Image (cartoon, rainbow, N blue to C red; front, side, top):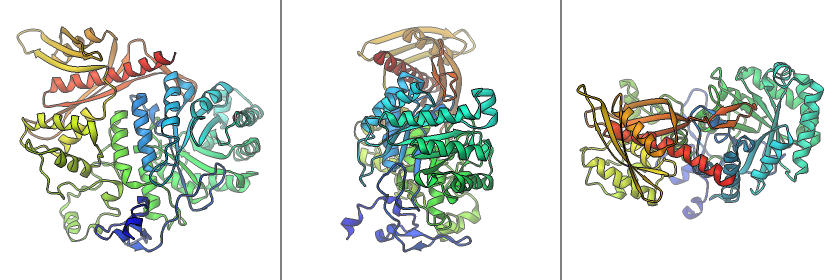
Length: 591
C-alpha cells in the first residue's frame, strides 16, 4: 500500500499531520470557527482535458499568466531561459494552462513562447499531466497568426484573443461601434479556429464596466464562432466581490450557448480585491481562474495563485466542494523563482509566501504554537513546500559539506542539485571562510546571486577601488567574456560604485541608463552580506508591444550579493546587463 500511495500527487494533502503518511490523503472540511480537522474524503483526480468542458463540475482549472501579464510589471523583463525555467516550475506545480506570453509583442517573446510550447507543452509530469500552452493575441489576424505559430507545437495549444467591450474603451480607445466590436470578435475567433486551433479563449476587456446586455450578445456570438473558454476580466480592478460574483452568475444565466464553454475570471488588484473577486467568481460558476505567482502584474497586480489555491484547499467544502490540481508543495519554489527572475521582491507580510507568513513573535502566539500549532496556523508551511528553520538542527559554517547545504536549502524551499548546487557550494564556502555562521538569510541571498542569474555573456572577474575625501574615486574592473578573454578597464567617478559602473561600461560598450539602485544588509552585524538590486534600460530604449498596442521601453533588473558592497553592486549591474544583452542576442539570431 505504501508504494502505491507515493504516486498520488500532493494536492491531496492539506493536512497538519506530520507523521502518518496515510493522513496526507485526507481532505480538510474546516468549519467557520474551528481549526482544520482531517475529513476522510479523497479529492477527485484531475479530469482529462477537453477544451470546452470539464467532466467534474467541482474541478477548477488554474490558468497562470505570470509569463504574460506578470512580465508587464516595470523591471520584470525576463530572458528566454528564465521564462523556460519558470514554465517548467509551473508545470511541476500542476497549473492547467500556462499563458506563456504575447507572441506579437516582439520576436524574443515569439521565440520564448515557441520554446515553451515545445519543451514544456509536450512533457508529462509525474501524474501524467501536460499543461495547455496559451498565447495572447489582440483581435487581428497578425496577432492571431503569431500566437498560433508560437503555440501550435504544444500537445494542447490555445489562442487567447480579446477586444474591449466597455463604453469608455470602445469610444476613446477603439473608436468603434458596438456592432463593429461584435463583428470583429466573432470573425477573429472564427479565424483562429480556421487555423486548426480547437481551443480558443475570448476575453471582453473591461467586462467589469461593460453593459450586461452587450456582454450577453458578444459572448453568445463568439460561442457560435467557436470559442471554448469565455474569460471575464475585471481589467481595472473596479468590481467588489458581490458585484463580480453577480456578473458571473448573470453571464451564466443569460448568455446563449454558455453551457458549451468554460467560464473564466481575470481579476486585477487595484482595490486589493482580486483574490476575493476571483473566489466569488468561482463560487458563482467560473471554472477557470486566471492568476499569477506572487500576484505580480500590471499596476497593482493580479489575483495571486498561492492565495486563490490555498483558499480553495482550506475552504473548498464551503465553496461547494471545489478543488484544483495544484501540487501545493511546489508553491514556495515557484514564488522564489519568480521573485528572483522578475526582480519584484515579495513583501514580508504577503499571504502564504511572505517571509512573515509563518513567523510568530508575540508571546501569546508563541505559547499557543508551542502547545498546538493549530492555535495560530490554519495551514502548515510544509503544505506549500516550506520547512521550518532549525527543525533539522543544522547550523552551517565553513566545515559544512554539500549534503548539509542541500538539506538546509530544501528546508528553505529550494530544490537545487547538480551543477547549480556545486557552484553554490563553492560560493558558500568562500563566504563561510569569512563568516562564522551562515544564516538562512545569507543562504537566500547567495542562491539569488549564484543560481537565479541570466545566461553569462560577461562574467565578473575582479574589482579594485580607491575612494575617500583625499581625491577622486577610482575603480579597476576585470570582466571575462564568453571566449574566456579577460578585459580590464579603469575609470573615475563620484564614488566607488559610480567609478566601477563606468569601468564596466567601458568594457561592455553597450550604453545603459541606471534607473534604480538599492542595497540592504541581509543580516545584522558588521560581517553581513550586502544585497544589491538594480534596474537598467538600454540607451536606445529597446521596446516591445504592450497588449494595449502601446510601445513600451524594456527594463532589466539584476541582483548581487557579497560581503563587499562594491562587489555586490558590480555583480548586480553585470547581471542586469547580461539579461539585456541575452535578449538582444536572441532577437539578432532570429532576425
